[in-house]
Image (tube, one colour):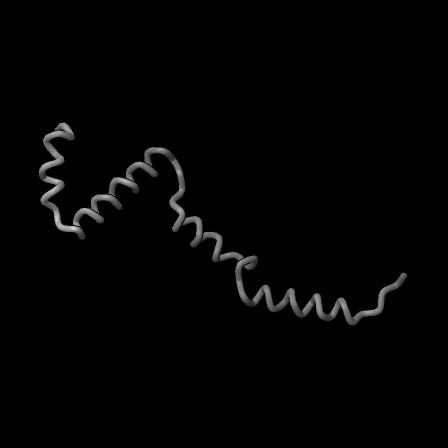
Amino acid sequence: MPLTELLPHLKDLSQADKLLLLHFLVSEMLNESGLVPLDTQNKTANSGLHDSFEAAAVLAQALAEAKKAPTNG
């Protein structure tokens, strides 16, 4: 179906359906291009220690202890 025939039908869609269509089209374009969606990148990055609050607390504790330790120099 050509886009010129599709446009009048798209204008009749509800706002929610237009958003779903937009999401579908963006997902299709990302899949075709081989790019990774940002929401997938964030989920992957957040699962690592470098983004965890616990790792930050451990690092802060290690830095505090390193400042207290005498240096050999």
